[in-house]
Image (tube, rainbow, N blue to C red; front, side):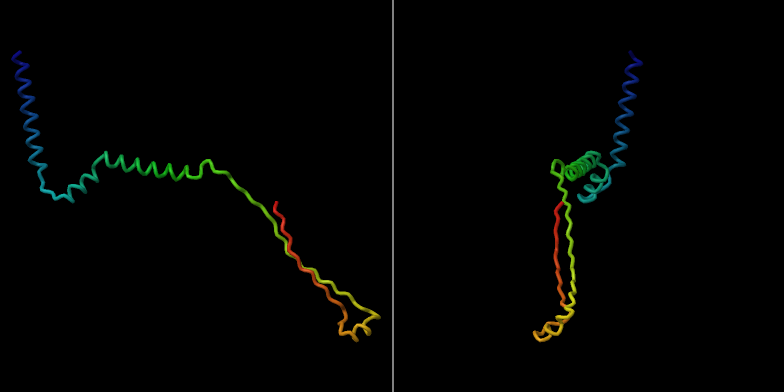
Length: 116
């Protein structure tokens, strides 16, 4: 029993001297901003909370369009122009009396849309 008491006393002495030594080393004067910077840099709880917030933001961004319908559209537009020249031949003399030039020129311009 005497051996147990000696061991317990030695253990208590060692832990109390270690705590006193740690307090004497760790007592560096800090202002609020320095203490806050050290806390933010070394705190696992704050880093974990920050990672959780980033995870939730990434999840919200990735599921933003989930469940929405997919809309596809395909269309075609064609614009064309056709010119037609019609020579008057023997009627050219009569056409000049009415200020009609030879050959007659016709132009057609159209746009066609095809929604597929």
